[in-house]
Structure formats: C-alpha cells, structure tokens
Amino acid sequence: MYVCICNAVTEKMIRQAANAGVRTLAELSRRTGCATTCGSCADLAEDILHEARAAAAPRPFKLPLLTIPQAA
Ligand code: FES
Image (tube, rainbow, N blue to C red; front, side, top):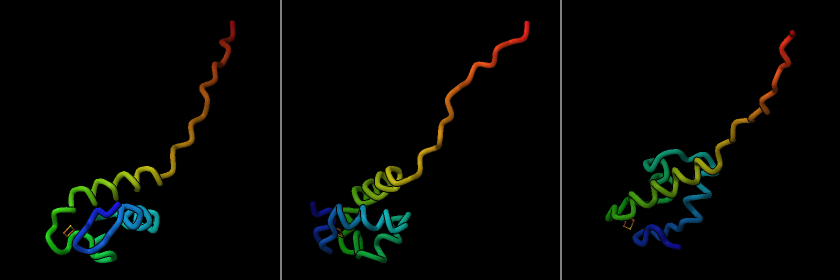
C-alpha cells in the first residue's frame, strides 16, 4: 500500500526502514523522501514506523515465578 503518494513510498518500505534502524520521521524522510512534499502522509508514516519499531523490539525475558517453601 502506498503511504506517500507524492514520493511513491510504500508501507513495506517504511517497515524495512524501521527494521534497518530508522527511528524518526525525519530520518525516514531523509532516506525515502516520505513526507517531504505535501506532508499529508506524515502522521500515517510515523504511526507505521513506530508500530514497526515496537514489533521489532526485543521482548523482555520473563522468568516463571517460583514459590520457595517456608521452613516450619
Ligand atoms: S503524500 Fe507524502 S508528501 Fe505528499
């Protein structure tokens, strides 16, 4: 799906940029041209970028809770 019609930037390109380490809309704009013409795509592009970054973030490792028997 095209997110930025002016510069032919797709959702897939934004997700690839996020996976490559792009963190901000400004950086995305420098790399792809997204949101550099009319700017109407900026909010959607930023939402997709942040969602992709969150999905790619490592999840915290959760240890199971253990119950330690109490001494009588
Ligand atoms: S739609 Fe992205 S700059 Fe116009």
